[in-house]
Length: 374
Image 1: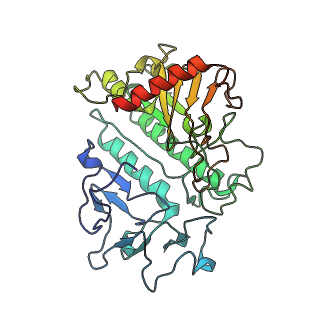
Image 2 (image 1 turned 180 degrees about the horizontal axis):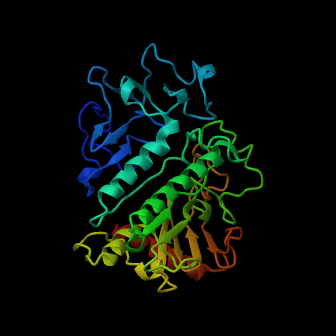
Image 3 (image 1 turned 45 degrees about the vertical axis):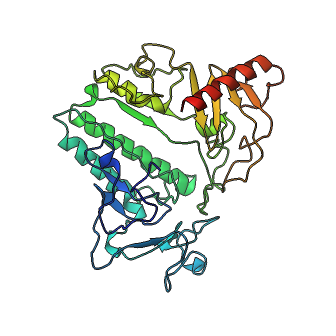
């Protein structure tokens, strides 16, 4: 969701810029959008992979292409049915968001994604082993549509979602194994994290809800993806660096993914350029376990902003808005101001705004200052 290309309508048959290669990466192998959106193709360094010039790609997010099946008209043909949305073009037997035609040789196979992406990542590590390198490996697996490879299909009691988690776990293992094999582990920092809280039904009938059982994907936290509560904004973050991080440690330090650029620069001994990363802080001491503290506040975002300072969490009031598809009932879109003491109430069940007006005022002013600065 960082953007690809300068215009909304793109010619997928030509190199597309700007992209990762224009924003600091030396090379890139990515999907064009998300797994549930067209065009369902990989892109390497700005070009669609395996595109046949005689079979150009056309994309529309508004109108279907005459004569091609759709997830509504041809629903009976789907190998994975939709629960909401995801009913436009059919690619690989799965309904998607948006319509496309052409590019037959370039289309990915969902069940092979784990091998395609891990293969590219491991090749990069091997090719870069003799020099410093940075790899950003964004796995698709837990995102819909969940289509696990045959090696993982049916291996987890939670169905496709559980199988996809196993598949993601395997890929993490492959990266760590390769670093060990190449004797790079001691000198390599690996961070595993995510982009938003969990969502079980996100548009496909993959039995994720039916087979969830008593598992709570967000643990003790309220909400999930699409919400401003901790279940939507608090991310897992695990780090491995044998030379600097002792195994088995945990920390309560407050860290934002926004802090990674300045932290990586500090760890690499390369001060950040003047004016770069204005919201980023060096939290390397917290990341390595050398300090129990990180940043003193963090801005949380899920379509709106909230502020956490220490254990206090302020959610400004908002008029109830239209729910996003699959949105948790506890979205946080309440008209009244909400204040939670996360030390006593990590599940954000008790709004203590009325009892703490001075804290509400202080945090509210701080959040407005941050808004004005940016």
